[in-house]
Length: 173
Image 1 (cartoon, helix red, strand yellow):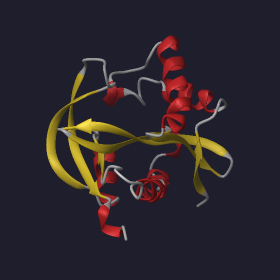
Image 2 (cartoon, one colour):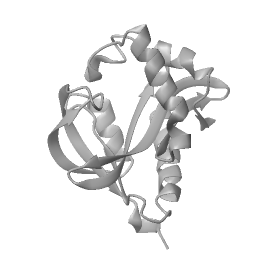
Image 3 (cartoon, one colour):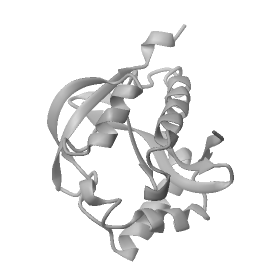
Image 4 (cartoon, rainbow, N blue to C red):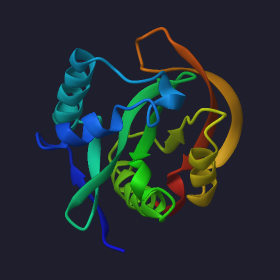
């Protein structure tokens, strides 16, 4: 299966619009307005320049079929990397999220080599999002337990999530 990650770009706005549906955004508060979507797109484009992470389009062959990201954040007084993903419904259940997740873990392990970089990757899927929780297990994350998690960050909206953790030090020289 030809799954690869491509850094977020202007054409990925069309993918973001395809993700912005009640079905796809069920576990994270529902679809966003066009203004919110455009602001999210601008944030995704700016992430690499800020040096704190990257949003990627997930490609199957040449088609954008999902998204996955990592970025730095403070969590419980510690700097961590956070990840999250989406795969369009017609492509779910094919191992695409697992392939994209494995590729992302490789990217984040490289980022963790930088001085003072976080040494742990977290994912915070809703406690009710069984496929995303299963993916965390499949990728080798360890479940720390349920938590209240603000999403989107800075919104004041809390969701009940599972805190999954992957130590990045394991393969560092």
